[in-house]
Image (cartoon, rainbow, N blue to C red; front, side, top):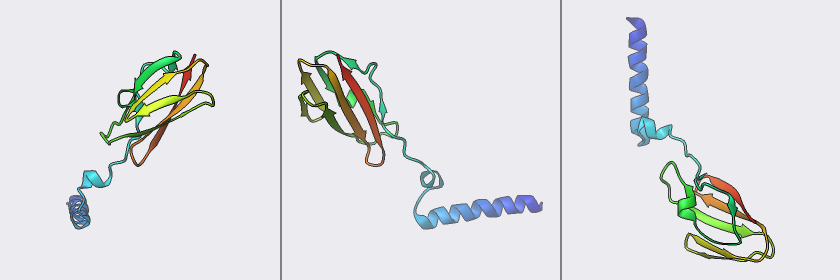
Length: 111
């Protein structure tokens, strides 16, 4: 009977502390999951358009923000979450997706 009493007292303490902090027990222990690259390839031709909202996703459903850093000599245009590339040279572009807490980097190759 004594172990059961300790178990119940522990559960009540956790519930009270969660109520005082204004958080639910599951919410207080939930960790952020970083964005992930969902696109089927990292190899692109020298002319392409990529919607970053379709290329990256966030398992938590957080809103993502994006940056794109091309190699020297490669110019890109970025409008909202869409990048367009039309270049004569090969190289790479470093894409960044952030959910405000975690960042995911993905290097894509232009061949």
